Image 1: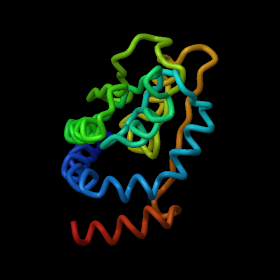
Image 2: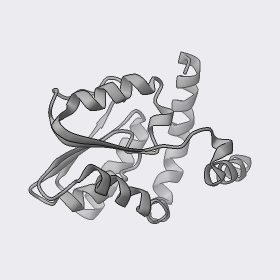
Image 3: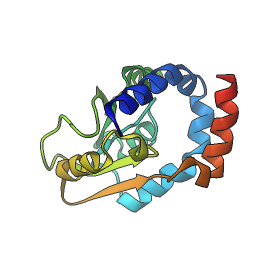
Length: 173
């Protein structure tokens, strides 16, 4: 992705953050099966430390925080400040204290190596400016024997959910 494309992508996500927050409950329910699959694939359990890269307005971070419980922790990251702020508001609304939030790019994670038991990204990797660099960073911060679990899609025209929904929404928003 070129620098201009990356900047345009971030601009669009900043503008969309309000709507992701407004419809968070619907989106959470809609993507719950994907979140469950990420948790299962990564083997996330109570007490673990988990990194969510491109966590948007808080999912799957907040669901994972429920799984790891008070003995565990989740770090929710996103490149878009408005998304991070929305995630923080939702965590406060729910009274969750085992989630931390940080605005950062996936290709430059501000965490020490071997910091997490697992790292996840739900439908975010395809928006990373440099997906390979983002994946290297996720692998760097996961402890040996830990897991990285990703849910991604390819070109939008090959994904009817994304293509149809996005084309309709883009006409009205």
